Each structure stands twice: as C-alpha cells, then as structure tokens.
Length: 330
Image: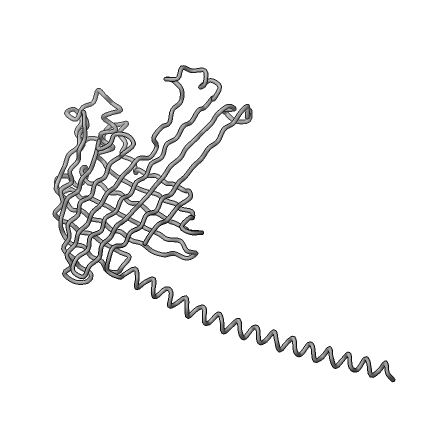
C-alpha cells in the first residue's frame, strides 16, 4: 500500500513540475516578445535621431580610406611558367568631406584620391643578378586626385544658385600634366538629403599640360551628381558622377568620370571596402597615341581624325580596389 502511495505522490509531483515548467517557459516567451517590441521601438527612435542629426544645419566632416595589399613569391614552383617569381602590389583610395549647411546657403567641399603601385619580377634569381639600374622597379598603376568646392545660395530648400570649382589630376607622376580645372556657375538641385545634382551651363574647362602635349580648354556645361545610400547588411554606398560637355567640340573635348564606393563597417570604423571608377576622356587617348608614335604630330593627325588611325585607341578607363577600410565621421 505504501508503495502505491509513493508512486502516486511522485506522479502528482511530476505533473505539477511539468505544468510549472511549461507555465514558466510561456512567461519567458511572453517577456521576450514584449522586450523585442520595446527594442524595435527604441531602434526606431535612434534611427529618427540619426536622421535629424544628419539634416541639422552646421558642419559635417568625414573621411574614409581603403587599403589593398597583395604580396606573393614563388621559388622553384616548376608547374608555373615563371618558377621563380614575385609580385607585390598595394593601393589606396581615400575620400574626405567638409560640408556646411545654413538656412540661406551651403558650402560643400570634398577630396578624393586613388593610387596603386605594382612590382612584378618574372625571375627573382635573374633579376638579382642584373645591375641595380636594370632591376625590376615599382610601377604606378593607378593615380588620381579630385578636389571639389561647391557654394550655393538657396532660393528654396531644394534649389540654389551655385558656383563650382573642381580640380582633377595625378599626384604620384606627371602632376598637373594634364590637370583639369573646371570653374562655373549655374544651379544646384537637392531633391533629398542624400542626393545633390549640379547643373552649370556656364563653365570653363581649363586643361593644363607641359611639353609637347596637345590639350584644348573650352567653354561648356558641367554636370555633377553625388548620391549616398545605406544598403542592407550595414553597407554604405556612395556614387559620384562628374561630366563636362564641351560647346567647342562635344565629341573630342568632353569628358566624364564616375566613381562608386561600397563600405561595410564591422567594428569601430574598421571594415571592408570596394571602389571602382570609370572614365572617358578622348583628349587623354589622343595624347597617349601621340606619345606612342613620335613621328606623328598634331599637325599631321588632328584630334578629329584620331580614331581613324589603325592603332589609335580611346578605351574606357577603369580601376577597382578591394581592401580594409577605416571610416571617420562626425
């Protein structure tokens, strides 16, 4: 009889414990649902505050740098065409901005640079045996700098009369040869906080060069579009298009550059970035062709006849860089 009572008590306790546990689990689930709702509401408030801060009048400063590095060396790797070879390359792209926004005017300033150098030694043993002046050296594979300053007087919150100064060149090699300076005036449209469109029908494109280079300055229309967007997974995207349409010779003196950058910040401003750029500039293609063919001069082949030459090229210029990034903004 006592054994039956003991089993009955144990069964009752087991049922009670199971019911109590189920009740506690349901309570935990209810608390989790409530806390998740609270967290979502707080996150919405945080996002709203960030949006307010982003549009608040005053100076906005920021900088972003992307570093790419690749080192490799092979020794007696007989399966390769160059069994004793090494390749080293590094590149960096950086951008910085300082923007001032007031009730009646704005002033936007930006700096963008991109540089890369590469050293390829097909046979390290043979290279080390050569005299120093003949050994493989670093070659510049990317080189660009762009400085922009835009001032605008607001007619409405979204439309302003504006003046723009933009300088583009290289800085590692052939600085200011060529160098492009755009100075112009017109209007700037800001349909939303992350998009700025500049339309300057009165713009002079000044091209500076040294030596025998043949470049022409001209009057034309300057168009600039700058767009930033936050993508899923915490990725920040920036796209910048800068174009000049020449009134003097639209086919030969016009040019454009389009740069896109993607940045994923993982920890305290450190992350991964990818940047690629596109450019088309027929004057640069023409002068590269003249430099490669010393017997041809601007008098014998004008820029208008450039693409009719059998070995003339005016390619779409491109670059890309993938690497670690560091982001600073306030």
